[in-house]
Amino acid sequence: MRWLELNADGVVINIVVWDGVSPYTPAGVAQLLPCADNVGVSYGWKIVDGMWEAPPVETTEEIVYE
Image 1 (cartoon, rainbow, N blue to C red):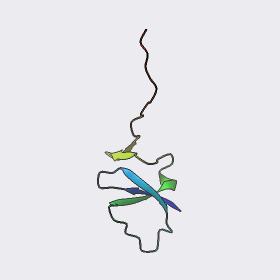
Image 2: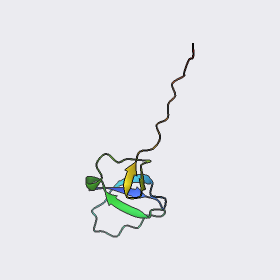
Image 3: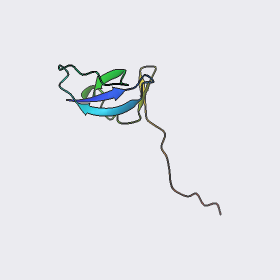
């Protein structure tokens, strides 16, 4: 099963495959959440007051003013 690894700030820093039973205590990871319970969440997402927030969208598109 796939799991989200969150840091102390509640940000998804990694996604791993783990059986959910074997000992697993990765450094820098404050919380593990199953992907199946958090559909659509990926790297950079953050939990704020129990709700997921997507990371800001970065654009590389040049804006031309006429």
